[in-house]
Image 1 (tube, rainbow, N blue to C red):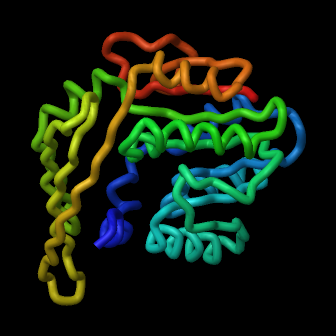
Image 2: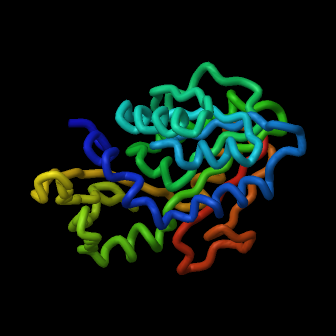
Length: 246
C-alpha cells in the first residue's frame, strides 16, 4: 500500500495544529504585486493550504503524488463551491506549468524526496515553471530537528478517536530518518478501533547545499530564514525557510 494511502483518512485531524495561516501570511509578505498571482501548491495534500491561498487572492493549482489525498482535496473544494485544478504528479516530475508567480513546497514536503538527484530535479523543474522574477518558496527540517528532536521518540497522540504511536529510526544516509507510525482509528458506529501502520522516510540537507543547488540551477537571489520569521537560522531552529527568485 502506497505511502499516505490510509493516512489520508486521518491526515487533517493530525495536522490540525500546523500553523497554516502563518504559511499564508509568510507567502503574502513576499508575494508579487500583480493581481491574482499564479501559485502552484506542490505536495498540496488534502488542499487545506490550497484553499487558504485561493481565499487570499491567488490563482491556485495543486499537485500531489497521492490519489487519496487529491480525492479529499477535490471534495473540500466542492464543499466550498471553489474550483482549484489538482493533478496527481510527483514533485520531481513537475510539468505543464509555465509563467508561475510562486511555487510553494510547504510543510517540509521536499524532505520526502529520498535522493539529492530528486531534490535537484524538483528545484530545476520549479525554476523552469516560474516566470522571470517568480519565486520558489519551500521549507525543510533543520539538521537539529532531524538529528536531535526526532530522535526523542516515541511520540504519542490520543484524542479518543485516533491514537497513534510514532517511533523514529535513523536512516542509512546522513540526515535521514524513518517515521514508523501505528494508528488506531475508532469506528464511530461500532466503537471498535482499526489498526494500520505507516512508514515514511524523510531526508534533509545542510542549508548551504540547498543554496549551492539553487545557484547552479540559475536562481538570481536566495533568502534564508527560520521558523516563520525573517531571522537567520540558529543552532536550535527547527524549520528552515528558503526563498529563491528566478
